Length: 236
Image (cartoon, rainbow, N blue to C red; front, side, top):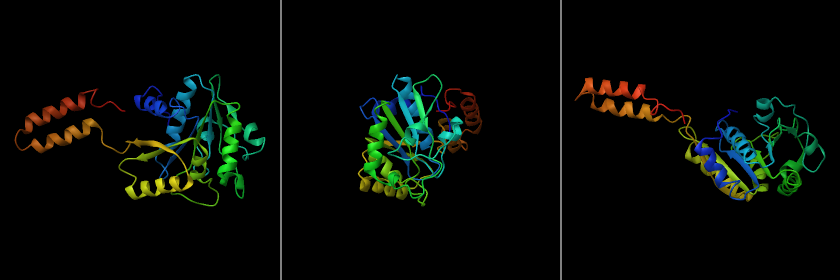
């Protein structure tokens, strides 16, 4: 799980369309593993806490749990409907952000597989926290130990689907959306992760090569200008 600056305009827009729009529990999921949903969930949680809202980030991702590892927190066994779902929460310094790492074991814990149980637990968390951000596993990775991501998302008031451009196939996105729809989750929108997409500078240099046969020296100079441009090579 990477940490991206919450000052990015993309994070601000995500916050504006979710929490600032009145949604108090947000499920963040993805079609496939490695899309960046945990990074997005963490960024949204930090941005929400920065707005002065007491925020709880919950890791429901048993396949690749990252909240506990990223924040150096001890994971405990917890399940919805019990005191353990509160006792395992960690405050993060002096911020208004709190985190609940993924449970250390959920095998045969049916409370994680019922929308009604998770909805009741989120309502319980809302007594102490203004906003709950749920980080889930990917929708197309299934095994017995996973907490069904579509169930978590259905228990939340809104869902954000993270898609990694250049990596995720259209069929995977369609399957992910179908699972969310069947579960009754409310999809608020998608976040496109452009990590695998070429940057503006790379695209401009590629286009200049089409003109090499007409003005090779000029195009080489232009590519040098592009390579030296801090604006065109800015990482977004």
